[in-house]
Length: 176
Image 1 (cartoon, rainbow, N blue to C red):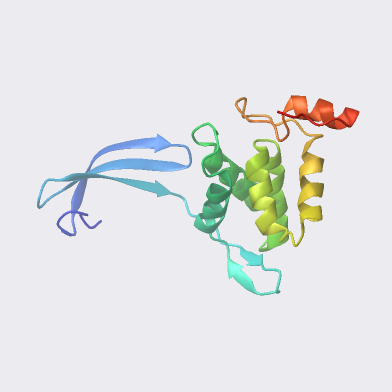
Image 2 (cartoon, rainbow, N blue to C red):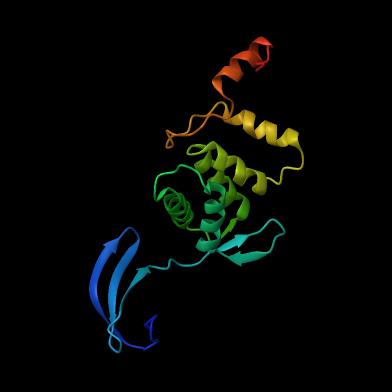
């Protein structure tokens, strides 16, 4: 293990702790005595993703994590929610035991998770994943959310304020 401070090639482990899916180790460089933390996790047997254009590429957890993070950016989600979504999806895929899985399956799994957690993150992800080409497709996706209640976020803002929903149903507009 290279020291991140002096690049010396040897260090000793000062402390080890189990974390969710791996081990956290505190290390100390044997040259400069600086301390640093490393995280180890078991790398499962790889599987291939079948892309929309029929190309195959190796599953990349970081790529999935990045996409979900972008969708959830600046949303009031509890700490660890994004990592849990990705962990759950990865575990589901691994438990299926398949060597190849379509990217569309993964996209649908992400959207199912986000739909139950945060509407805005769901719409952000769906707009990229489903490649909305017009406002009608986006409106249909938003309308489908009106039937679902998010499970996690209690500070979620409603898509349409309640007073506007009432006036829209009666055909009146709020004038200020």
